[in-house]
Length: 347
Ligand SMILES: Nc1nc2c(ncn2[C@@H]2O[C@H](COP(=O)(O)OP(=O)(O)OP(=O)(O)O)[C@@H](O)[C@H]2O)c(=O)[nH]1
Ligand SMILES: [Mg+2]
Image 1 (cartoon, rainbow, N blue to C red):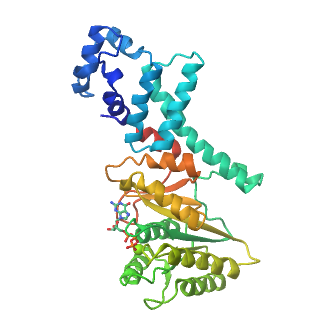
Image 2 (tube, rainbow, N blue to C red; image 1 turned 120 degrees about the vertical axis):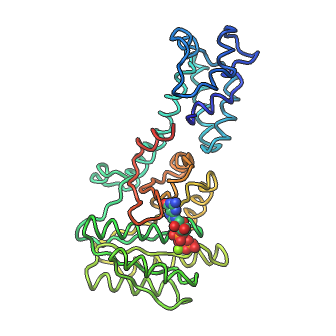
Image 3 (cartoon, rainbow, N blue to C red; image 1 turned 60 degrees about the vertical axis):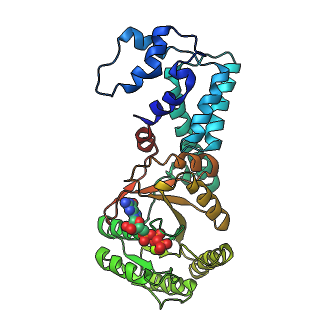
């Protein structure tokens, strides 16, 4: 059953209980028979469908819709803002039909991505940037691009670095350097060494327990001296506490900025989120964004069962774009994000 049918099937007025004023015939279908018909089964007569589709929504029934949307992975803010919009339309004497709901929600969710575009373009305040797509990652010629990969432990930071290294090293022929900035976890360097060998990227590492900022300093020096195009910085997912993590991340940023001062460079902080974590990802994005401004997101494990509705709430609330989707454990398993394709797949 599609996401939206599932939501509708849980709402009493759309299932056709006594609150509904529709005909008995409609109630029968709505209350269960229709729910049991699979997509390949034959569909009730056209005229009946037409009746079903023309059911008007009443103000009090929006509470049920809101409740179901909150329970879905779209989150509280988005659910409330959407139903508020519908309430305003009803107040303005507009009629809303059941069959329009899905399109309305789709449009609303796509609107969250448009908000990101407007917000990002305004923030960059450059006429050129108006043409830039904030959902696309670019690694321009003659500019050193430095990407700091953040995220809680186990979300897929190191694997995503391998995927980015593979993509830009092999498909785009870029000179890629990986900085093993996660000096906290004992096996982190070994894991990165294996990925660097497989992807053909170079690696800067220091003994376990060294300062991450020292690793990053070394990597930036090498990148400058040897004309690299892209530096990917792995960071630790777990530290003793938030204060330590904050200090470490801002020290890394400082080192990058200080050592590239006066030179054309682009620094991007990319947060890795696990699609299976639901609304918890919104909290992670909020927390990391407070620690150090997050510019973009990689959503991993999108090959699992989650449809990651939280991406919409992150766009709506934090205006942060997703740029890549991780769709498996192999280095080839990385897709570029498309707002339209993602929204289409969600329904
Ligand atoms: N199915 C699937 N698995 C993934 C994806 N990305 C990462 N993984 C798996 O998730 C697990 C954790 O990945 P890592 O890259 O080690 O995660 P990390 O964030 O670096 O973890 P720490 O360094 O311990 O904080 C591994 O088993 C990966 O193979 C993905 O897109 N799909
Ligand atoms: Mg790691």
